[in-house]
Image 1 (tube, one colour):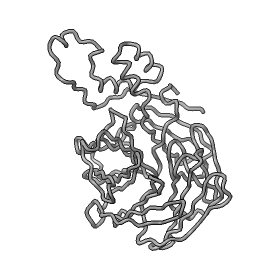
Image 2 (image 1 turned 45 degrees about the vertical axis):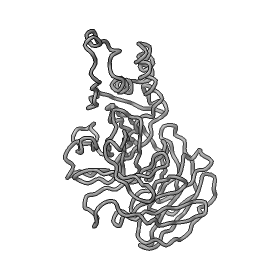
Image 3 (image 1 turned 180 degrees about the vertical axis):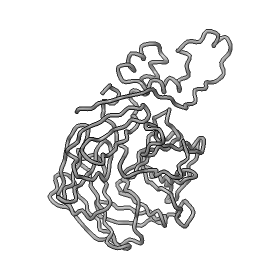
Length: 359
């Protein structure tokens, strides 16, 4: 894997305040007296070899270093080239850029991403395949008609239980659903009735694929094994009619389904509980970090210096600043009226396993 990188310093707005201590304890403060939340943030910015060296300083540094060493890192932003095969991978929170030449993705469209894998297809040749840009592993699927508009898969293609799903809507009230898996020789296809056309990306949670109609607020699911398409009676969480300039995304975490709505004024987050959307507000969001793009949305729970924020797949005015919304402060990082939240030319992807190592 040939990757080049460049980096700059990073500043954060993390709250580093610690409880008040007696004067006798702070009269001769040392680095060991830093609060654990600040130590975790510092350690999370170190590559693996520096993390290990820092952990030898004292007991508190060891605990902080180990806690972030095993933590799952933030996803990277993968940006597609307008021409050619040179793809960019940004870690916007460490201001690092990696570039990779990926001819395997030539003249293809990436339609879904999950756990470091991409699902891509070529309309002319009808090819559809899995691709891991870091390992360069490519896994082909049976050829497929390019008319299908929505794709998703349940787990990495190396899993024995992976299911690939494709949806096509020839009419507003009909959906054509096809499923497949690596090693299969053909797709299994069937027609199902639907009340309205889902216009949101697919999410897999609890053995079902979910999608959402943003205008009517209707939630749909598909159970692959018995091949059941179901319309769920769930009250729309936001006011009707549909608001202009609103981005609506589905996401999942630990078996729960979440809905994120983004408008020029604010971002709202809801959790599906007993077929009802329950609004989540800080501190009920409980340290979640949400990464939203047009192809996928990712949730994280162990990123202390990014908690209670939504990050979008578009950069702001600065070339390395990622647009975000803070639930704690109820505001965007900048005015967003004229900006598209999630352009089609980028998505969030899990970094390679050796992300803590200098590449």
